[in-house]
Length: 116
Image (cartoon, rainbow, N blue to C red; front, top):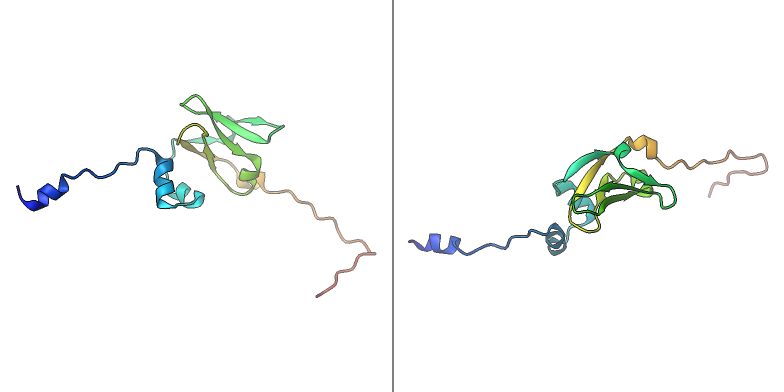
């Protein structure tokens, strides 16, 4: 065997745990989502919603649940994570339905805009 084949026989590290790989490569959540392979794509209507905690949940194959908050959805996030394993799902939803509904009251006559 030539030296080339001998060098190729050295095993390369395999990262089965996505979280460990992401930690080692220093990727943040945004880039992680762009490069990840989703376990599934699930419509928001299939999630259960808890009004008290404002959290949407969906069963994970590991026995736990995928979670995403209403605030995450309002901020345009579309990835639900499982706290017990490395699986993630893409949440399919109408982003306009979850836009922050901040109402700004109209100015009254007693209030004037001041230009700085």
